[in-house]
Image 1 (cartoon, rainbow, N blue to C red):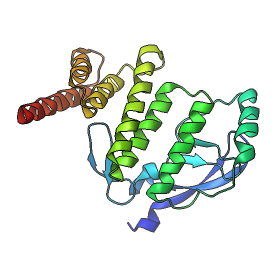
Image 2: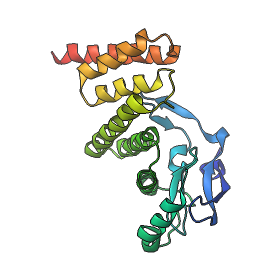
Image 3: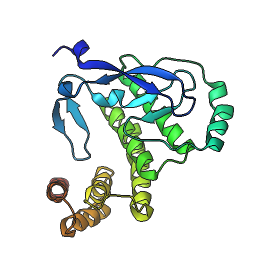
Length: 223
């Protein structure tokens, strides 16, 4: 499949201003992951679908993750219009995106999610995907910054969000983020928790064992 054949246009209705627009999405048959890292960052053979995961309204600038359903109160809607929408300069993100445009779209979505008080698990996921984009751009400092932001929001969500899944994914991810931030003691704590958790799915138990072993190997090499 050619790169240009990997897309289709999806119609979106902005949940804030109700304007309709179209934006590029990636066909499922064009999504072919070549490699997936421990924090679920993936590289793709044809096109990275994450570049197109965010919907950005050209009229008001409201941006949101494709798989979320933002709950916008009338108060927040009016506040956004006054403080953000009134200053928004119309721009188009509905076509094919460069990595820089994808990064802008994710940062817009991150801003909007925090403005609207979206769940911290959603904000943490956005921070993680921003970190992935910086990884692809070989910007280690910014990658680490957003990995830590993701860790902050995921930790708070794990401790207080009753809607968090109990399948072991979040606990594993907390361990992996600590590992990537060179915080081995905290990483081990969460990896052990996944391994001993009877509700954790086998794939997360396996990942926890694998990443824990990887961390031990690295410690042996550097010691």
